[in-house]
Length: 356
Length: 204
Image 1 (cartoon, rainbow over the protein chains, first blue to last red):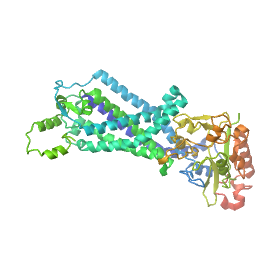
Image 2: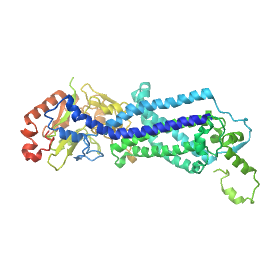
Image 3: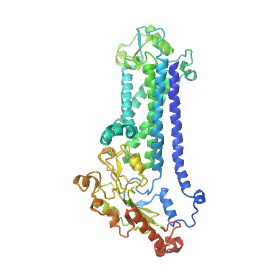
Image 4: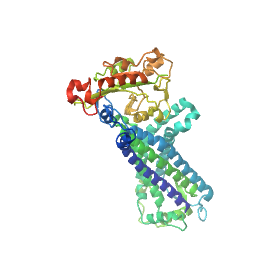
């Protein structure tokens, strides 16, 4: 099926982003060594032979390589005379993060737009029956939308901080950008920890439905049926399970690094802050790309999917077509005779839906 | 036009912290914010050196380049200043600065950062020179009065030099010439403390 190919695009984007994380950490950790070696040593002497080096060459080399001195001023990193790592971080942000992430996100949007226009929406085979079955309880829907709204807000405010100078400065002027960015930073820092709570809530409600089941690997290897043919799956297919687990992993990384960044009063040094920023921004780009794909699939990609999370109910034919094992379970359940007699008190206490 | 620079002669700095105190006093800087600090390397060992460091007013300032709201600007004298009304207190300039010059007051619970504050080369800020707004936000504007930064003026041993970059480097070059190299020091640590005072590569 076509949605699987889009999912593969998202997966590929996430893998690329993970590789970028690895490469960047590698570069950052080695950057300093490279910079030092370029400054002194045989390569330099070959071009400009220095017979009498500056008498203070040892002092200033030590000062540059983070020999931590003492100081009467109290503050984080106050004893560090020269922090060379800041240049590596700034170069990462200005030369890698801002330009490349812009292209990645634009490319994801364009690819999905092209796919959507060319291929169109996958219709429900056999049309709608008009009968519905419940897919997401009220509790689950509230948790999802709580997280979704927070995500959108954090995404917008985060992107303002990332791209504001490039995109907005000429539009709104310096004072205007200062206001918008100041509000974005305050909002981002305030609602970021709340997103962590939303993640925990969604995890609790959905984790048991997203555990590995036989057939998941098969589903993935066949691209979810993208290349033709029909695949069976349960309540959530392997692509949706991947979305769930990547959300949790990305979410953990982003909330963890975000907490380090937005509470700087616990003695974090600059190196830790820079590393947290690198993790936070790379994961954010991967996360946004993945969610763009998710939103597309869940709205335009497959007909009849969005109502699962808005009303909580889906058409029976949709269930039959996309989640046949789950459909059989639910429908079978509803048609089975009631044995033993139902305990009225217990039913009244429990949540109405079988699924929650 | 002169390009203003600082230079701290590590051979002369005696870690008296006069520069730190003068700066703090002149600009009424709040607790916790340290525009200037003296860092001592190898404290207590032969070859101990102290250096006074604040904003170095870089020609290609990394703080200015990384700021997400572009609140930095450079005066005609090459002094790097910023606009506190636009600053959002994100802290990126502090990460990027090799010298740790940007400082942040602690404004609320959970350590949320206030507006960035740093050495202004005693040049104030974007407000009108020597206006009460400028003094309140950025401290005293000595450059507008034709004076040099108070830290350099206060330095007991004239270790900290501040002013036109060409003149500062001329003074420093004369000093090095007079002192001689590691093997033939005319004065300084090596003369006072013998061989032990001269750690290899540390004599200037």
